[in-house]
Length: 176
Image (cartoon, rainbow, N blue to C red):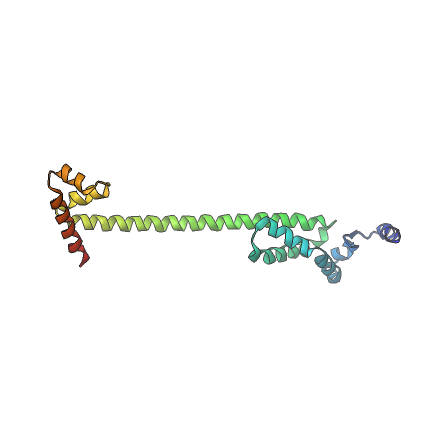
């Protein structure tokens, strides 16, 4: 009952209290001690909230630090502790935006590298096929299309032994 009277009396004086009777007016005026009290009162809950949203232990402390830094910068406009939760929500959204932007940039880089790899592979295959005789090229192309050796022999009207011999020579030719 005494706390309620004290709260009412302070409210009449124009002071606003939040949480464990934090003095918002003092925080608005730049009182570091009162801000520290607010930080201590809310930091664990804010950390839990940020972790639940981000599921990333490594970034929680940095995000929480940013939240309270923003609260300090906006101290003149604080009217209740709700500002902490509003800023926390926005910081979590920013976290995912940055993460998504980073992911998209990496995806674009991977795509560029993949395209580059494909171009290099295509150039390698072009050079490889140019070094082959027409008979060797026919066998390699049919193998790449998924045909078995016996099927290749039937398609090219040659014996399966000839296909095996040509493949053996190809391996020998390019293994040195």
